[in-house]
Length: 320
Image (cartoon, rainbow, N blue to C red; front, side):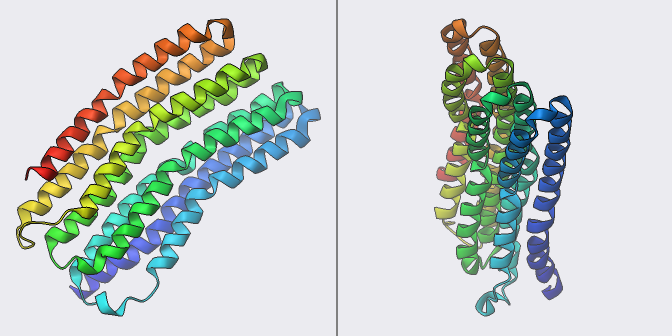
């Protein structure tokens, strides 16, 4: 039993760094390749492409930095909880939150950086606006890993109270909910951000419309992530009526699974719809109002899937 609990503890520490680093490494590799191709397309724009590349790489690193920070925090000795098996089981919640979110964000946040480099090659005299749009989209894309980090801090603070399997399942579920809930919105944000940065290179005169559409659409794409955060925080506040009753723990875990998986389709689909609208805005900016209204209406309807998951998750937890 002692060795198995140590495996969960040190395994969580290792995975928080390793998986996030793999994702960030892939993302940075793809961005570097895009920068080289962009310079090959437009050698005279090399200084601006290099600046775009460096700024993009800095934000791609966010997942790895957060993974390292959490690993260092977990390495801090906790003598009072070292002998509690369920305490270390609860650390799986941290592993799910940080590793799942970081594994997706590291690659997805490279999409806008890659296509911003291509756009600078096409529009070198408009590079500042392109860079600003890239930084805006990349910054908003870090929301899932930041939420995962916040939930992980709460889990770490409550681990000492996880004296039963029910308590551990509650904390594991909280981390799993925000981890799984990051996948769909992160992919959707990546697809949309890629299209925004590419579209500005196609038609720089559509910048005002694209900027406005970006702020609204990214808020909608992230809606399922907000729902996942709400369920995660709710699980952190819940207490089982009978700590020895395993059914309560199973219900907590099931609610987390429902909400986490319920964000996959809406997050990705909302991002795809918004990305297609973004390309059309670049082609015909004079039709911005009709394109934006149609896209936003579709995105709102898509989000109902995650709302249904939220309702069931709340029902499972509150009416158990």
